[in-house]
Length: 194
Image (cartoon, rainbow, N blue to C red; front, side, top):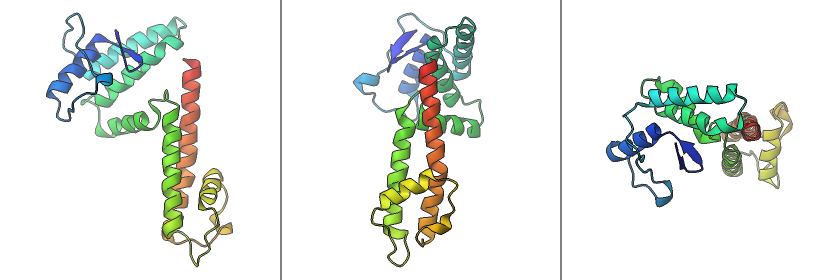
């Protein structure tokens, strides 16, 4: 194993990433901080599903021995290989990719909070520009959006009259806010447990 971006990785993953950076379709020059270096000792070429299986076996062995804090890097590596495994269906890889993007596989606490903030700002902008009918916009659109996102069960009838885009913004907020708050709690739980 070796360190990378705050986590320890297997030599197989490191070699796979080095090979992918050289021949990958989407390769971009790596920044000095995130550069992958080849392992010190030669590693037999492995595909993502093989590397993922190794991560999974190591993670399960550590969990069985009662070392839950030591499994976070193994879990992250396993999920990374699932995300890049071409043998898995596109739908599964898309779900895993979204899980990575919005919560870092339940291990990155700031990602869902950042996503919630971006969603809240975008919906506030939408409400302010194309959401309210007859100039009925509340004085503070941001507070209206925030309270609407946190009151999932509140009926939409008791607020100001909204155009179609305003209703869309409220629906997005009512779906996204609980999702991102749940992912935040999951991430906190994942960091505390591990």
